[in-house]
Length: 275
Ligand code: DGL
Image 1 (spheres, rainbow, N blue to C red):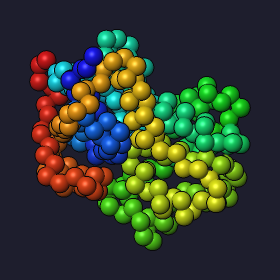
Image 2: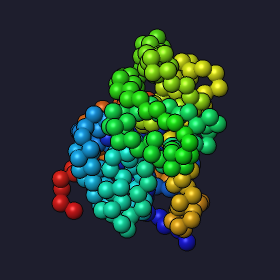
Image 3: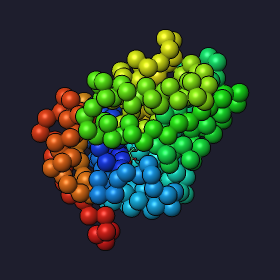
Image 4: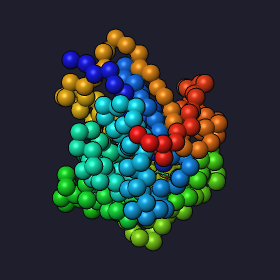
């Protein structure tokens, strides 16, 4: 049994392309429809109520494309809105990035001392500590809001002295001021995988870096297989991109997240149009 419908993905903007990229590589025969809510980002500093409202509107827009599964690529939206989406859409499987990231972190950590770098909203939600401790009850999870890191990535400053200085400052605060020791660090934001090399330089040797993008791709693969929702394995997947503002800017900046992709075309999506 195959299901040729697409997989819908949404994020607050560009960052979710790291999740899209992991999905595309893991599931090359699947079709993907990506929606970046570029008109309303960032989500990381917004209230839970607002993020839930945006997430529901994004999901409704993707449902109009007849998707078979929804991936909430945005950590902030996964942390704050996934249960609301699952309640509102009982017939559409909705997967977020927190559980897969938490699973990977719990597996990687020998000591149970885990740090999560994320947005303010994700940290405020407590979603990562809750998810990790559900799997590993003895884990001690310290989540740190790193708002400036999102801006660095959007600016394309993922490596070099400026990026290193900002990353060092967050990590120093953790290690020297808050005296947190850890053996695993979770990149709990769509943008942070692009900073992995720079973050690695600021960490003591032996600390594992966990990225929820690759973990969610494996979970989606397993889910599709289990529910017999996979696309025909001999075909090549098709990808479409929608944004809620500035498609040209999205097209230009997308190459930072997708170095191998050329000629990406983004279509303006109207979230207020009647279903
Ligand atoms: N996509 C968001 C996340 O993963 C980061 C950007 C934003 O704040 O909107 O949390």
